View (cartoon, one colour):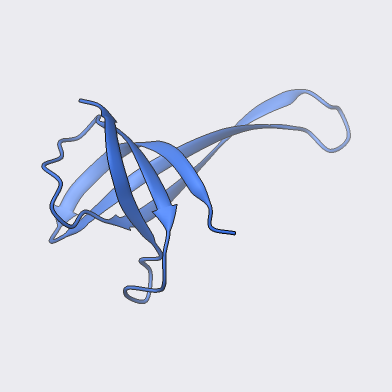
Length: 78
């Protein structure tokens, strides 16, 4: 089963690649307080016209390079 995640575009400095920050909320293992965790994922932009701050949906795909394993599926909010 392939992962589908939502995140915000934080960098567009590479060709055909965007850095998407995916946030999740997870409980602390001992204290059970909810903690916000972020992960930056490199995703293939293919033919999308993006700008920093766009909310996007990304999906897992075959490895496209050493660090790119996700592809942008759609732009949710400009």
